[in-house]
Length: 204
Image (cartoon, rainbow, N blue to C red):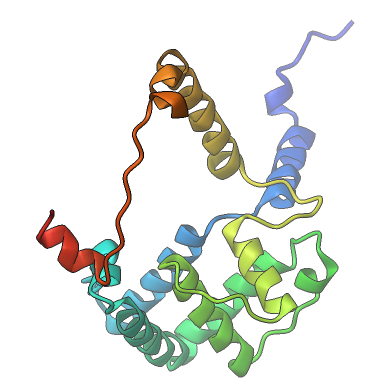
């Protein structure tokens, strides 16, 4: 009889673990956006990035968010895709992610200078909630990078299951106070304004 061994020390365990992680890799929009920022810093030879879009809510209220996002897109395209090293790094990062998708269209996508710029711009737009749904393939690519693809691919624990866990915790915390939110106990008030931001500065 041989003595029992720790399964974690078996070479096959590590191989299966790596394969399992690869199969479930989806990520989220923040992680790929931060990758873009890291490549921008590399192109600028800077350790820090000074974000010009500081308060998205205020930008939306002041109706400047579209202009700010477009300016940010142009900067990333110019600095990241304009450099040979950073553009190649982004190309390999995206291709490595896409080829792991269980969706054949995503896994077989071929990136070039034109469509990689389109993907970059849509990543930024998605990050700041300004993206308008586009053609089917591009939407699939962005959804995959967001970890929201509807396929056999499982979404990473750190994204999806944490959301579910938080949702359940919130539900448990609110269960004792649901009576307060019953419509029969509410008085509903509403009024229309032309400019919500200006109205908030001068409440009724």
